[in-house]
Amino acid sequence: MNVVGLFSNKPIVMINGKGPYSLTAGQTKQGVKLLSANSSKATLVIKGKRQVIGMSQAASIGASSPTASDSSANKPVNLYTDSAGHFFGSLSINGTSLKCLVDTGAMNSGDVKYARINYKKGRKIRISTANGVVPAY
Image (cartoon, rainbow, N blue to C red; front, top):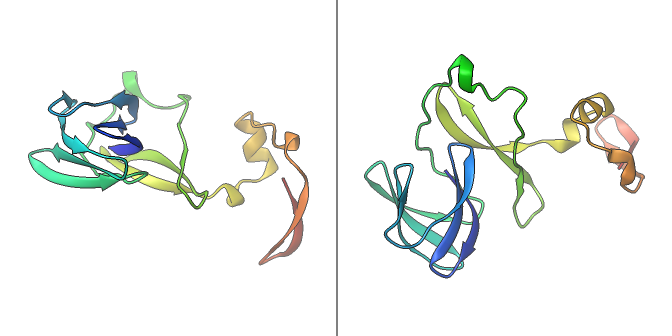
């Protein structure tokens, strides 16, 4: 469960990779109940446990194990950024939903072409890495 937006009394959440959903106080969606929210945090009950979650933070609610019919292969993945510009996405490992940092710097041109990202629309720059100065977009 990820909080991807916060407004007074109304957070925007992703639950087990689905959504986004807007919740109001007292509302329950997929086992997640909103108690209250403001512009900096949401107070929720997840699997009977009260949790306070801020923007771009996540809580594990334990997704069910995927079956062949609901495999996430070839389905789009939503990425979210935090205030520092880091990219995050939801990942399921052995049926447990986790919020993960996506290391976009580790992607090569083959990866981004496979993902159909037109990186050459960006501005070409030179960056210093452990392997020396290299071009980047």
